[in-house]
Structure formats: structure tokens, C-alpha cells
Amino acid sequence: MWPSSSSSRRRVRGFTLLEAMISLLLLVIVLIVAMTMLFQMRAFAERQQYFMLPRQAARRATDYLSYYFAGASDVNYVDSTHPSPNALIMYYNLNGAVTQASYNNLTGTETLNALLPASVTPPIPANTSTKFGDVGTDVITMVSPFSPGRYQVWAPFPTPLGSGKDLFFNFRVGCGVGLDDVANLAAFKAATGFDAVTGSALLMLVDRNGSWSYVRIPSGGLGASDCSDVTAGSFKNIKVTVDTASATLPAPPNGVASLTDPVYLVTGLQVISFRVLTDSVDGVPKLQQKLGLFDPNTDNPGTAFTNVMENVEDLQIAYVYSQDAAAGTGIDKSLVWNTASQTIDPTAPGCGALPAPGCDTHVPFQAGPNFGAAIPPLDISNVIGVRFSITGRSPLLPIGARQLTNVDAKDDLVVADPSKTPNQHFRPRSEDHDVTMDTVFLTRPLYDQYDHYRATATLMLRNRIPKG
Image (cartoon, rainbow, N blue to C red; front, top):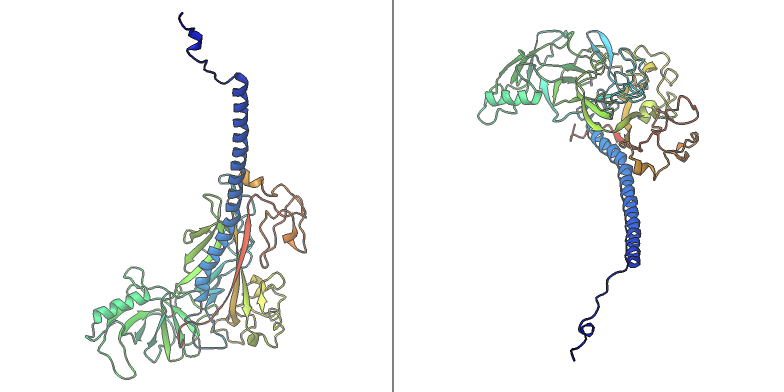
């Protein structure tokens, strides 16, 4: 008999519908758990990134400013009791008018200043910025040499000060063994930043008593080099014709004092100004700098400032005075000013009888070498150091990062210790710049959806040049 066909092959079995549904359900559960963990980890990583960004911005800005503050007094070498006569510039004189160069806590009410209006694109709230910088921030102007040098002016120094004065300098940097006048003149141009169109950079004349004045070599004022002049007591190697006083040349706040031989030309200066201003293009607060004196006539906001670092929302300067300068004046126990508890104002010791510009501008007084009276105790020449604080801000927190923080809490400010306020999403207090309060809920800070961080550095103003 033929074998049965059913016994020659086995039945092949597949998944049942129930088994397939259970497998798919398990797969969906695994995917949901995995994706939930992935999104949570991504949000956590994003939160950490936004947590670190303001710290990095504040520290980078602090390091950047430290470089300039550390060298601010490198060319001040004469008077050990007043080592910083023009390291930090509070005021200067331009065509007979005293001009302010540094500011404390801008309000918009300063001379030539005003509040900038709110903006829709980009979104900038009202009362954010003034023409000079953001509301409540400081402006600082300093002399920070990049390659300082000093060269003696051939005596006698011409008096009186004025226009068309011939000066001879003991400058032999490029003479070499062969007495190369072409190379020496080129070296002098490099040292003074001279070109035939704009003239030289802003330079200084300093005498043996510490008196100083600004000077600039005009485009047609550079003479010739004479490397062969090695006469004892002479060394008239470079000749220039300059205006030692003029309407266009900045001068010390109270005018130029007579300079006493020996007088030195100080080169390699870099006058630099810093401020914080919210950019009208993208609405981001930025640290800005200008190579030159801050000029309220043109820097409002002007085009001379350039952006250095973004997401910097506050700059505060506190001034450290010497114990010797403060002794017996009533400020010997308050050596740091423009802090949360000590602010330079008309009520500060030694400010009551000061002539304008005085402490009513809330920055140190600057007498200058032609003051004609005893230097007030809060004069900038008595400042031996600065403590500056930078507040950094993160970009706007994304939705995932906001879910991992307390941006929705709207508690009142803990006045005694703002760091104990549950929601920390507001610009922190820094020196004498207090927390900005909500205009509706007056007991609450102006909360936002950013992370903030304040970094502080203290630097002494001292000449780092050997035997300087």
C-alpha cells in the first residue's frame, strides 16, 4: 500500500494573533521607557549647559578685564604715595570743559545721557538701557599700556605750554651700530603709533614730580632723526613739533600744570573704556570696549564701541583706597567705596566742600596735577586697587530646561539674604547695584527665564615694570 501523505511531512506553526499583540505591547513599553529616559537626560544635559553658560561668560569677562586693570598703572613710576595719578580716568578736560569719563550706576539722568525707549524687535523692555550703557551698570576708562616706554625730553622744557612747541627726544632705539636714521625714525613711529594721516596715538608727558599731561604728535609734526647727536646732556635724536596745549587735545581735569625738568615722553599707551549695553540688533546685553577716552558727546551710544562678549549684563567697580591716604580723614575704616554699604556721594567724608566735579557724580574725585590745593582723600590718585564684578546671563531657557527648575515660583525677595529666595531667576545684587524689583509686585524681584551668575576679582594697581 502507498504510505499516507500526512505522515511524510510535519505541520509548520507561526505566531498566533495573541502572541503578536503581546510582543508589540512589550516593544511599545520598552520604547516608551527608553524615550522617556532619553528626553529626561537630554533636558538634564540642556539644563546643565544653561547652568554653566553664565558662569563661563562671567569668568571669561573677568579674566579679560583683569588683563587691563593689572597693567593700568605700569607707566606711573614717580610718586610712591600716589602711585596711580592717571591709571584710572574719572575726568578729563577738553577745550576748557571738564568731561566725565567714568560713571557709577547709570540712570539716564547724567549730562547728555537719556533712557532709550523700549523695543519690539528685538524685544527690549523699557528702562533697560541708557545712551551710555545699561541702567545701573558702570562705565570705566583707564590707561592700559601695551608696550610702555619713556624717553627723556631735551631740557629745558618749553614754557609756557601752547601750540607749535619743538621737542627733542633721547630716542636711539633704531640707530644701531651704523647710526641708521631711517630705521630710528621708523622705530619712533612704531613706538608712538604715528602715521602721516592721523598723527600719533595719545601720549603722555610726565615730569620728576609726577605731574603729567597728554600730548599727541600731529600728522605734520614729525621731524627728522639724528643718531649722530651723542653730546653729553643733549641726545637730541628725534625732533617733533607739537601742541602741548590746545582745544582739541585732552588735558588733566583742572588743566595742564607746568612741567619741571627732567620731563619724559611716555609711549605705548592704550586708553580704553568699558561698558555694558544691550545690543539693539539682537537684544542681548554685551560687554563693549572702546580704544580711547569715553566721550559723552559722541558715545551715546555712538559707533566707537565694539562688542567684546555677549550675555554680560552688569559691570560694577569698587575702589580700594590706601590706609596712608585715608588716615585721619574719617574714611580709614571704610577703604572700599561703591559697595553695597559705602557709596561715594556728597555725604561721604571729604566730599562736602569739593569743587565740581565732586562726589555728586558718585565716582572718585580727580584733582589732576594743576588742582592748586591739597588732594581730597577720595581722589582717584589715592586708589591702590579695584574690585570689579561681572554678572553673566544665560540664553533664554528652553522649555525642557524650565521644567527642571523653579522659574514658575514667584516668591517675595528675602531682603536679608536674596540667595535664600526660592526662585533665583533674576539679576543678583552686585556692589551698590541692587536687585531690580517688579513694578507691579513691589516686594518681588523682576523674575525672568534666564540663569545668572556674578564673578568678582580684586586687583592692585602697581607698576609691574622692573625699576619703574
